Length: 109
Image (cartoon, rainbow, N blue to C red):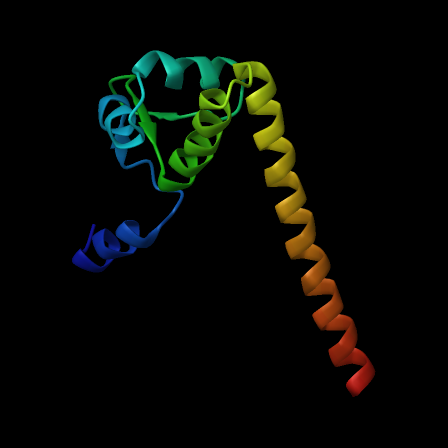
C-alpha cells in the first residue's frame, strides 16, 4: 500500500474505518443501538480479519439519521425502514437528474 492509497481511503465514504466503539462514540449512542440497526438490516458493517465490526462514514450518516428518528419516538424497526426508503428516494432522484442531463445534452446536439 502506498501513501497515496492511504490518503484516498481518508476520502472514501465507503471505507470501513471506524470500530464499533468509535462509531458509537461519534454518534453519541450505544453499541447495542448499532447492533440493533444491523439486525434490522439498515446497515451491514464489514468485519475485520478478527471478526470485529467496522463502519464507514456513509454507514455512520445512515445510523445518525436512524438515531434521530428513534430519539423522536419512532420505533427502531420503523426508523430503519424510513431511512432505507429515504436513501432509495435520494438515489432515484440522483439517477433521474442524470437522465435529464443526458437527455438535454442529446437534444442540444
